[in-house]
Length: 324
Length: 252
Ligand SMILES: Nc1ncnc2c1ncn2[C@@H]1O[C@H](COP(=O)(O)OP(=O)(O)OP(=O)(O)O)[C@@H](O)[C@H]1O
Ligand SMILES: [Mg+2]
Image (cartoon, rainbow over all chains, first blue to last red; front, side, top):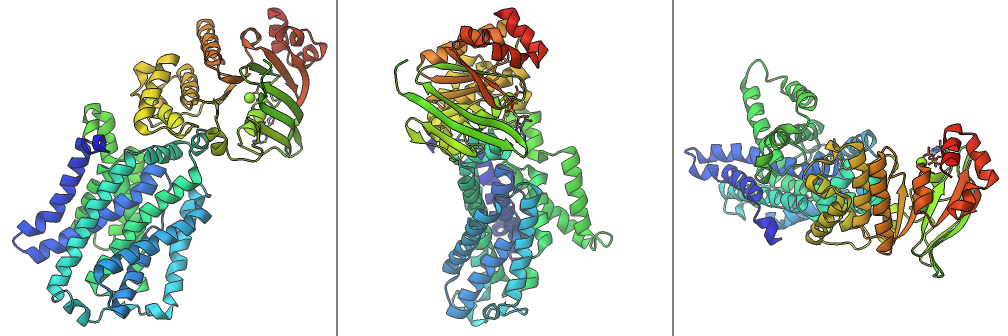
């Protein structure tokens, strides 16, 4: 552990994340900067979580957004109905996503390749359909936070800052966990599974368990993130909570930055959000920004399958110590 | 050689659809022995390894390792009990470094070592098989002979009691074969029991204490290398495969 913490790559990744998080404190229009940073941090946390499964373990989850949606719903419900504090609600959201991943893991992680990917889409769609008909969660209309809830945090403005700080801390934790996984014995087992699952099992890696825990880890943080995000939004509905294309955007971010690296998803998420921001204000591209994401994914897979950080690592082997 | 057998294969059968890949295979493997397994292509040798290490359960019969029934256990359970193997078709973890490949063997094999300890073990084993100067390279960048040695290094890093070697000599030149045979002997001298499949007949006959011959899934002969090489049934089996028959006869 001590040796792990001396790795400059960890500190570089944490410093970049912290820079995104602290930027609003220095900006002139703080509320505006906070919204921008919120979007980036949310993308970083989601991409880095997804990377634990996609990058380290080699399983492509096309429906990963289900964990953000489910966690968001559970936390939102607890805050709205029982007035639970945001911090506790966030933990409950993370826990519910973790439980879903654990149960799913036992069932669908036995599938390999495309079959697993398809199953994850099915799970997302099934969950959306279920919640749409689940009256306690507001059915198709969803739920809206009663304004009084924000009063407990010192008013809406304070509440928004609180959600922001929570997201920043969560993102730091995700980056740290992702580094610790990558440099641990558990992570070595995951990477062995990614490279050749049968050979890994022959060497003693208990693949079913390792995959399940990787899935749980990659689900718990999006669950917490969902609560923070929908708390900030003030309302949640099935249409916004289980947006399939956000899963795909997550994959684009991981692939762009470099799957299986710690730094890759951070840079990929930030770069993708920046690009998306530019496209959304461009009259030419604003309606086809998703098509751009698709084309981008295609280009990465065809020309730099290792992503930016992966490419740099192979190109400049001396950078490997810093680019974990 | 009077010790209790480390592995007992009892009446093991396995079919693939209509093909009887293994039929009632039965033998004991004493602790500390090198047992050779030969037979023409498609005889079922690799399939027998796959049954022993849990890739697929045998349809009939029992496998007993160190006195305990291991029939139907998963490969990782069997690995953790101290069985390690190499693959005939090499299975490197391509994007991981040579060192990491070997560390997987040590971390998850039967001693379940920590990362730190595994690095030391991996370096030692890489030195033993002569790959130490390639430790940082991705496994994908090795040539086939080196990948074979990597297979062996990974298996050894687990510090197994029983080692299953599937054609580790295939594709090596005569010098490399001689080196590898020496390596196999040294492994045995460290107390590891070895079951070895090999087509390079003179090397196998040289290194094995005993040999079992499979043909179309049947166990057709068993004995010392000398006995087996002169067994008419064995010669007949190999006549279906003239190239091998020639080799077997030529090197007797
Ligand atoms: N997974 C499988 N599915 C179907 N048939 C198989 C499978 N594995 C092996 N076989 C068949 O079983 C028979 C035995 O194969 P096996 O690989 O055990 O032979 P072998 O003795 O190792 O041969 P070689 O010397 O060529 O390596 C062959 O006819 C092979 O085609
Ligand atoms: Mg074979």
